[in-house]
Length: 310
Image 1 (cartoon, rainbow, N blue to C red):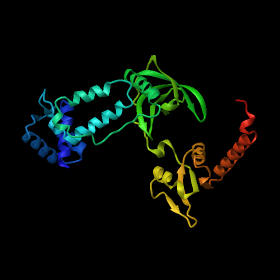
Image 2: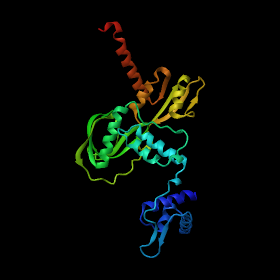
Image 3: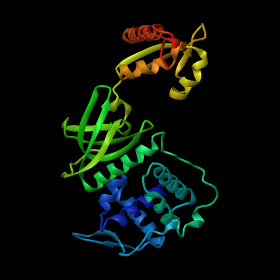
Image 4: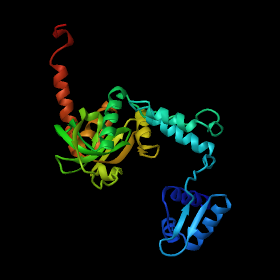
């Protein structure tokens, strides 16, 4: 849309000292003639744009010009404040709240009515999560090595990383950075981290790529699950995978076929359904569940509750 492109051009001009028409044309994938018309439209709107021909010339905006906040609509402001409020829900400080107050000053006419979007990114681990996020952000900002103990299904380890991003994904918080132990970029889940501290050792910032957080990249799926669920757990399947994830069988049970990446996590998930599910494939999962069921039966069948001292 033209209005989106005009706002985009204005944003670029406010950030760059000068830019050429061919560069703008390439950026927005339009012709130079179109950019010329856009610049003319911005000038007619009262924005002081200066063009200079010849070598070293280009398009610039008058020094000292500031974008009028009226370019932001009431809905824009609500979205900005909702995003800041969500970050404040996991912040260990009042930074985002203070930032919201700065934005709201003089913008009361753009903030009308009740908040329509409420986002709370905190979790049951809020008291331990906020200090970790604050420590990681400090280490990222000051380029200091981060150390912590990490607990994973493969075991416990002590890690040192160059931190680059704090990530919220899959309903959990992560830190992404260069792992000095693995000599590669890694994603670490904050709830599995303990004794997180910023060291005094600095590091030279790498050209760290933005992490590919697609499920396919992080969790390659090579396990095919086929399972039959009882109808009274339909709500769980819909909650996790949507209303079209299963096929109703003649006996009323629900057939679920899904790809998975981790056998251990899949086994644990199956156990949460108790006797409300029957796994068809893979056979390895059936074996795991049988072995665990036999072990549990042995553990709980050895003694009665009265046999234990209280």
